Length: 447
Ligand code: CP
Image (cartoon, rainbow, N blue to C red):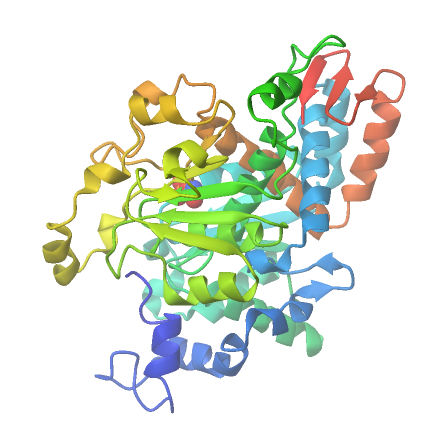
C-alpha cells in the first residue's frame, strides 16, 4: 500500500510514543512528529470530527464523504445542474467567471491524476478562480527537507484554497486540523479539499458518483412527451421501479479492499433509505470488503452481500440481473506486495471483467459506472461496452467538473448567488417539467 509513513495503521500501531519513525528503524522525522501531534484527533470516530470541519452551516474543509447529508447532496446536485446550464450561455459564463475571480487555488497533487486534477482546474476556471499547481514534489522545496506542514502553510500564504491529493492516508485530514489550529490562533487559514488520500477516502469522487446517480435515476429523457415518458415505459417492465437513489441495489465489482472511491461512495449511499450494497470481489483479504467498512455499513443498518461472482444468487436471481447500478473498479496492482502477487495467481480474475453478454443481462436502465482510469491490460470494461447507453463513465467524469464547481461555490458561499442568477436568467424561458428536466431556449437538459 502507498500510505507509509502516515498510514492510519502506522499511526495506531507504531507511533505510540514518537520515539521511533514509522518503520521503527530511525528517529522520527518532523513530518512523522507533526502527524503524531494530530493522532488523537485522527483516531476519533468520523462522526465526532464533522463539526470541526464546518464553519456554521457551511463546509469549511472537505475531508470525508461522511460530511455530506442527503440534503447537502441534493443541494450540490441542484447547484451543479445550474452551473452546467449557465455554462451553455455567454451571459451565464460571464456571470460565473466573475463570481470568485478574487480567489486563488493551489492544486497540490503529489499522486498521479487526470480526472480529479483537471476537473478541479476546470471547475476553478468556470468560477474564475486562478489556479496554480505542485504535482511533482521534486520541483518543490520538500526536496530540501521542508516538511509537508511547512509546505501547506506556505501554500496558505499565497492561496485561498488548497486542493490536495497525496499517497499518504490522513495527510489531508491532518492539514485541515493544522488550518483549524492556525485559525484559532488568529493566523491565516484556508479551506482544505481532499482530492484523494492514500487508500483512505476520495470524497469528491463520491460526490460526482452520487450526482451521476441522481441524474440517472430521474429517468428523464429528451424524448419524453405528454403521451409517454421513459420512466413510464420502464415501469411497465419493472413495476417496482421508483425515482431517486433510495431503495435500490448497488453492485461494486473488483478491488473492493483497496478502493478509496468504493469506501467513499458506499458511505454516501448508506445515507439513503433501504439501499442494498453487493460487493463482488475475490475472496482474498486484500481485495475483499475490509472489516472497517463492513462494520460501518452494518452499524448504519445497510443491507450488504459479499459474493465472488456476478453469477452468485442474491434474492433469487444472479447478481448481474438484479442490480440497479453497477460500479466497476480497477484492480490496483501497483499496490501489490510480493505475497499478494503470489496468492493472486490462484484467482480467476476473468470473473471481475464486464462482457457484452453480462451487460445484455442487466436491467435496461442500470448505469455502469467506473471512477476511471480503467486498465487496458486487465480490461474490466472493454471498449465495446462504451456504446451501450448504460455506459455512464465518460459522462460521470464530466459530471465531476460540474459538481466540483458546485462544491467550490458552496465552500466560498456563492451558491445562493448562482441560484438567484439562474432564476432571473431563465425565469422567462424555463418551466420545470414535473421537476424532471429544465426546458430552456437551449433545449431540454436532463437533470
Ligand atoms: N477517478 C479519479 O480519481 O481519477 P484520477 O486518478 O485520474 O484523478
